[in-house]
Image (cartoon, rainbow, N blue to C red; front, side, top):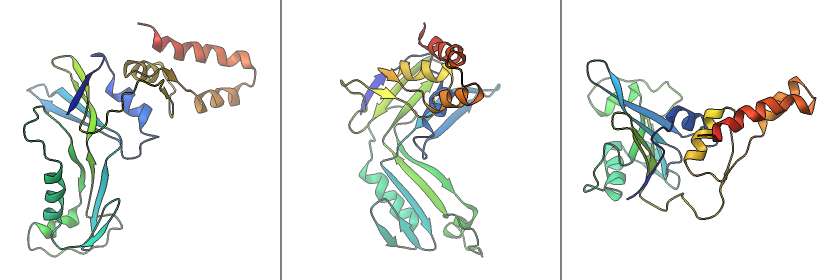
Amino acid sequence: MKRVPLDPDLDPYALFAASRDAHPHAFLLESLTGPERLREYTFIGFDPEMTISYRGGVLRTNWDTTKTDRPFEALRRILEEHATPDVPGPFVGGLVGYVSFEFVRHLDRVPVHLTSPFPECEFGLYLAGVIVDHRRRKAEYFTHGASRATALPLAVGFGVSTPDHVRTLASLGADGIVVGSAIVRQEAQDPDPRAVEPFVRELASGLRP
């Protein structure tokens, strides 16, 4: 597994907000610990290697559809294919998703009516992500596959609208930050090109130390 140190002052909420429009399966999770229930870790994932859903005896992934009444076994096989038992860390990737109430029928003998239009469970297999350690003031990007870090110039956009978004993307190594719809919204309020300048200056402030 590759690890890339990031700016310890990285704002995980700004990172998540700046990326969720482009990545509909993005997630943000936090661990809470101690008597004051302070955040210790924040985990962020963007683009899963695979999505898995189960409903009515049918398991669906990106590439396959299988009939089974043993969804746990199917999920366990997927995890075993990507197991990394010797890799330390609070979160090193895996399945992230939800289990619905209807899924209880696979845990106990209780009557359940499948009236919900949603899957009984749905997960993403995340092999890369960002970990923010609030207590130790550390942040890192990890990946089990090809790193998204690249030697080529990288321009990032989609949903950038605040200085915090700009600051977070710059800390992740973006060579350029593209702002489109946010400027269009500003122009819709005042078509005078000079009216956009203060907003652009405000965004640029996110590049300053």
